[in-house]
Image (tube, rainbow, N blue to C red; front, side, top):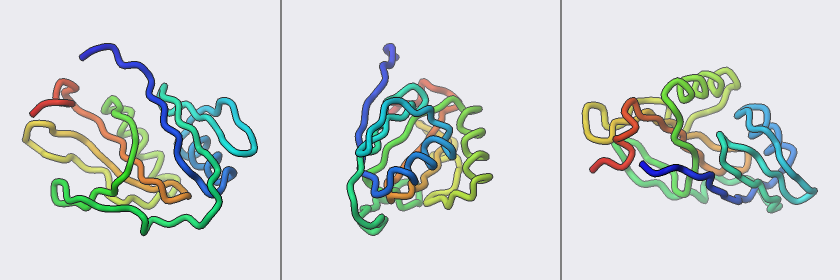
Length: 142
């Protein structure tokens, strides 16, 4: 694999205070710059920006595709973590009472691309996936 540089993603939220609590407190993302319209967060070294878009949170806007027997919400974003980080995050989310769209589990068990994965929504209804590989060389394996 080549050196990975941080990605940047901007996404809509309908309540900046709820986003600040969810990303800053629940996920533990350090906060960067902010205004009354947006907040930068450090998501495991990547820059994500919650931009205020007034309106009701609505997970019904998500599309789902079948993957390994689960309905994966689309769109979604997240980070590939080290396995110990993934387990720590899963426990942190459980402790915070986060409702999982797809509970933490091992996807493609015993197959190429075996990975730990979990899906959940932020307060604005944005879907997030966090995954990890016991063998990081499986990240792009066919």
